Length: 488
Image (cartoon, rainbow, N blue to C red):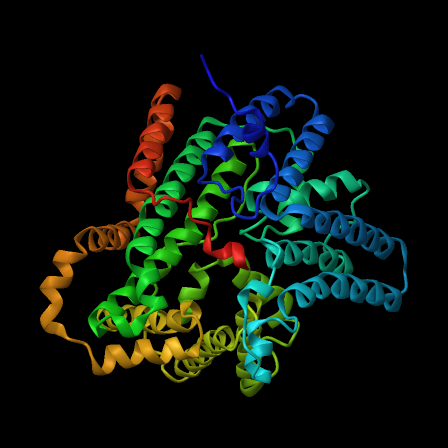
């Protein structure tokens, strides 16, 4: 009656570079349901629960990156032991050398995989032809190396006690919800939760379901639709489109990357919540910002605070005079740009944000009056468009495409085709507009929706998840779209 292809079924469980395990894939849901069922059964036995989650997390990464799951094993063994040795030696000099060893291992991985002779940046500097097929970047390597470094640095500073159990550290480093695309969960925030008695409240479970649903909606409905049906086409061939279409593609990408990245963060935070763990928020309506300084308090919060605490402040922060403060801001943002990728366009993106932060700091020190409603409105408009301007460098495939996009917008805008554009791309415009409308809605509306979902009975939550999944199936493209930050 049923013609089952056993080999094809078993093949789903093996790493396939063209079918990475994603939160928005059906196979992940297929794995997640039995994983959570066994997890619930193991709640009373802490050690077995930690082992079960760690094994599942390693398998999750294997499905994302193949044999590169062994990188996690290397990080766990090296950083766990280095931190232990730091805790056992009194000599500051020896501790420093141990920290240097951790930096060499973690940053060495980044340099080897991300900044090698095949990278876009190296080709730009040497004049060689860049071939992206020669570059293999293990998924999420920038995230889990920074996460592991937060542990060894905090132990070195004496802000955290070295763990006695390698299993606990493996659990922290490999924990699958945030492993490949953030948020960057610091050891000081996560490790104290491992041995606490897990108590998943109705509010936490409800918020977790709410975040999973909103994250899935943002990623698989809004972001993927506008990406596949408009944004990618324009950014890949800007000269084939009018300046009007190029400008709307920039606005579309601003919404795409927000929905994609914050959607992943929402799902990661939601998954952790329904398992009894709490992460700090990673986004806070960043396009509502009225300055670039405020934008970086709201965008990718886990990275911006990591750079602040582990780079900007150690460089001297704002403690060594005005000029040094501006230099430290620029260095931090340039390295933040380089963290995103080995290409000149990422460095320019970071440098532009560094200049904006330095300029705003200078203005703030010389203008003491509080901004009124008009200045806030103008500041929000200017901030959003500056961020969009910078996104062009971030997204475009090379500086030639950056020049082409700006050239089309400036010289070939063609406003007379506005109504034709609105008619031809009605569905794309709808999803972009809906994305911005949801993004700009008051915070208390979001909290009200969250409380509504929390108050639902379990059956109601199941229906909600099912409806979101059905909507995803209706609007999704032929292939499941990977998350943008998987490449970082």
